[in-house]
Image (cartoon, rainbow, N blue to C red; front, side, top):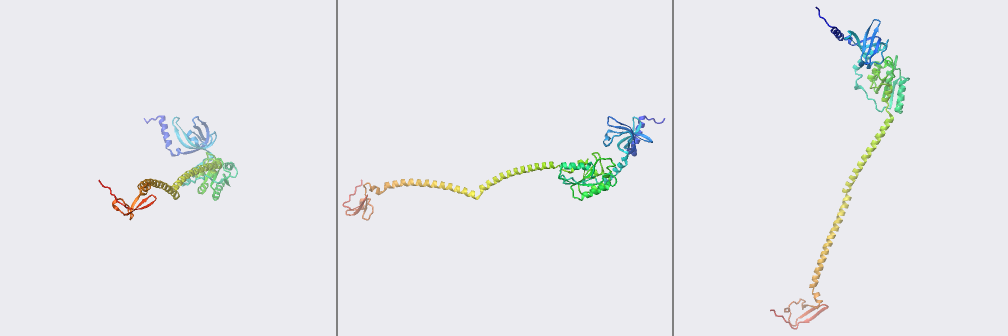
Length: 402
């Protein structure tokens, strides 16, 4: 008897066959939406049909992020995903990853092809991105002269900084010839020595925004020497220009916010910096004044004038000390001299004479200290207090010595 398989085994085998098929794993299917149901889990269940048949489909909640519209009955769409088998029910279905309205299908495919091509050429590389000036004063604008985009940019620019100059190059932003017009605008603005250029427009369908997906526009932005901000459509819209530009803004209003600095905020910062600078200078001056005072004290301390004054003061102190010591010595000497004078006065013959004694000399005026020095009839002199007496020796008596 031939091998017998369970239903589950057969379904699993068929599923593996589907999964192994390259074409079924990345397929675009177009059809009309029917039986569309939004489940509470976030998944979307629907059926794609055309005049020849139907296919069940599901888009899981994790893939809904890229869905830019609500699925409704009767919509003609193109769904990208994979076809596989749902084993429990034993039926195949489309697991949709992305859904676009049918009219945009071919454009979307062209978009992906050009995006891949330009990315491989390096036009999206970060190394080529130029920084947006922080304080731009001349801003170029490449957009239509009428519409919400230019008005939003003007209003926001005036509010943030009325001194910034705006240069508008009005151009077509959709339809035939729009891409060439945008390229001409970019090149003209780039030649005007501006600080930054805003390239963009308001929101719209992929067809409306298609001019910004053209290769010539992408290369014009890449070749631009002036930094470029891309601001095409709404926040969820992405164009080739967004990937090539130096910066992407989700909307034209946001582009104005990025390009034009807030003047009042700038002045407030300047004032704060000025205060900080003056405070820093004042603190530095205080430190330098203190250091200068210290240096001045040191210089004065070791200056020749101060040294001379110090030496003079020291000299005066020495003179005072020397004078005192000399006076002390002189006073001591005077005292001693007085003592010696008193002593000499006590020993002076004149002092003795004044008290009734006489100084006796022989005829040759030699003092007589012994009777043996004279004999009778020798002359001698007696010097007394008020004169001299001449005398003659009558007789000499010598005391006996016992």
